[in-house]
Length: 166
Image 1: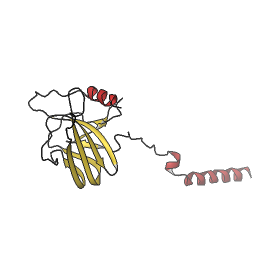
Image 2: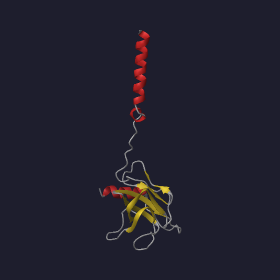
Image 3: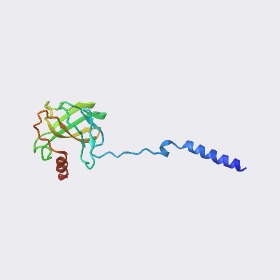
């Protein structure tokens, strides 16, 4: 009789274990994305990365070419990119200066030189807003300066300036 009860209990626990899914045992961990970087952006083959202690934008580590390909994760009906030049002191553009604007329809990629005014981005540091699928990712990158004469502002000066503006 004891064997029968033990066998019955073992059978019930085995059946119950089969009913439990892997997700119930190990629920998937939902990764919280930064508010200002809700989707990944890649420029010139480099994926933008959020740096520790900086919640304002993601960064492309190495300089890119003026005609580098910008890519996002999924196709968007409208891809809008606003590129703001960053001055040496970290200030984003001069008052009244217009950003470079790129519009692309039904795509997940476009080249940086596809600006509305047909002018390529000049060498220097840029802060871009990439708008796609109802969200905006902010990324900072440098357009390569082959002459070596351009004085590019540091990321620290840009972060300090943006934090000062609230």
